[in-house]
Length: 525
Image (cartoon, rainbow, N blue to C red):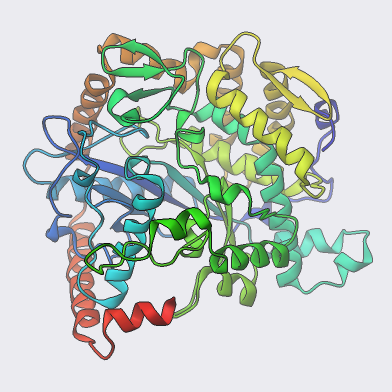
């Protein structure tokens, strides 16, 4: 990767027209735990009034029954996506029972000593529903249930085909010019992915918001965290502990060697992982003493989705397709940016500044040269990530690139400056100023590190005397904002209809008893 100095030259080709980017789409997935009024993790089932977590397109659950996930459809503008996400939150809040609230932080609310009290998500008695619960049981057996209570935001972005057509026309490499549009699009998205991995320290520094954890999260684990005050642990200059070794990690995956240098290599690596037994997981066994299955299989990955990554190439699967088959058949359709903490100060976990910054960053990663990401550079990138996760706000924090170490502020400012013309371009596309404003906000956080989200979280955790008190205060503030959010009669009717339809769809799946779950699982295994 070229040294930061070279990024001061604009990577924006002079032939690019802002109208090319009309047709960009973005969607948001936000996770949030349901919290009881006493601050502990909810033990209640997913509210039936919200429909079926198995078949609802926008309101579901992730690992645990209490970990809700809200999914917007692809939208043409950032305000539309944020509005849709706000509607979902307001609808959900109406149906929470017994004073439950949505926990506003990436790291979980209070967990008790019993891992079993982190209930696995339940999807009913159909084979597909039981399979989803078994997958989660396997995750708990493999990595512990506590790790699965962490929340994040996934930001999905796609560029319209006319962007790829124009880029391909201006290629000088004849091999790239000869590719089909589908293959060329995948090639460029993989370039975006490699650059995003290189620049994740920038994301963690600017929008990381998990510098503290509730002490209960570390129960039974060795750690190097320090007490901030009673019940709360932290690192003084941390930005995003969720993205570090206490977050969602999988040591078995380290040995996979899955790379992002091309689609075929990526898919081959995934398939190998899904079909390769792993001694540590074999040792756990497939069934418990009662013969009940405890994991889908003993492979490095039970299913493809178990592969944890900072960014994923995605394609919408058709019925019966796995994510890999969808990618193999139709190429990359969009990217999922996953290195994003929940913003505790936003009622919906993300605000306009973060959304616009991520889109400018995605465009920068798409347009910038992106050589293959090989093991040596990958090791440096991972060290940079660890540096920013654990001590990104330290006065002497540094980023290594091309063998040179840069103070983090200098490194970050060079990239943010290089992104300004792209922000102006997207402002032009959408007749707005949100992109330039977002870059300005991020630049301010680099100039004054106390303005970063992680610095605010530490200050407010101290102000409110602990993680639980701070989180509870924000949860109550957000609940008020959901109550004040106006839902049109059409929107309410739409979500009521979705809830009904999803329950009927789940029932239809449960009525289909042609094959027992034992046979269903045996076929998969």
